[in-house]
Amino acid sequence: MELKSRLIQLIEHTSQEEQALFARLSEDERAVRGEPDRWSPKDTIAHLAAWKTRLAEDLAAAARGETPARDEDFEVVNAKVFELNRDRSWSEILEEAAKARRQLVEQVEKTSEAELGGTETLPWQGDRPLWRLIVGTGTIHPLAMHLGPLLVERGEKEYATELQEEAARLLSELDESQSWQGTARYNLACHYALAGETETAIEKLREALELNPELTEWSKEDADLAAIREEPGYKALYTA
Image 1 (cartoon, rainbow, N blue to C red):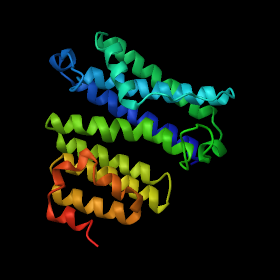
Image 2 (spheres, rainbow, N blue to C red; image 1 turned 90 degrees about the horizontal axis):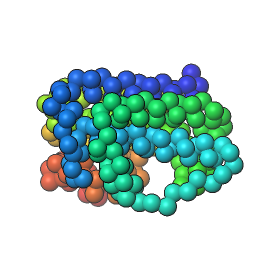
Image 3 (cartoon, helix red, strand yellow; image 1 turned 120 degrees about the horizontal axis):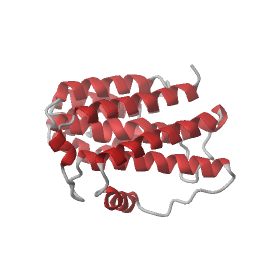
């Protein structure tokens, strides 16, 4: 399967998981009014949709030969998105999420395999191929950073783990490089740390850092790993 098809498959898979979770929320959970430092499920949907839309618009601009601008800190963007959407209805936000998914899929479909593997489409790519930014926004961000923690918070740790393991499997199939394989394991380490599975989290982190040492410095400050930071097994990963 070509890379483009796999990316679209992942975006669609992620969207289905989002919908499955949100469909199970009670009316009370849907009605919760979030705060800037504690988002409600509705705020989370709006947040994910906004970043998918933002990436889709950036890709569209690049395709027109324009240089997409990225002049705001992500926390500033998140705060603006929160305020713009906090009073919108549940149905409006769900429609926005569906639209964002369609926009992102459409732009990926229009992007060539060469561009997906290249590093010059967006100014902030650095040495990362475009497909990594797409999968980051379309899959890793929703599943690892939001859906997984939300499920754990709701007491659905087993389901959250199944979701993260399946996502890691799909992600690992995109690229056989040690760097990417390490990234996939790192996401699992974060999930297990948040889920209170200390030993598994440390083992996944060990695997991740061996495969991708570039993650080492970030892992020392990543809030997702805070729960295991004082563990002897964690500390042993950073001793010479």
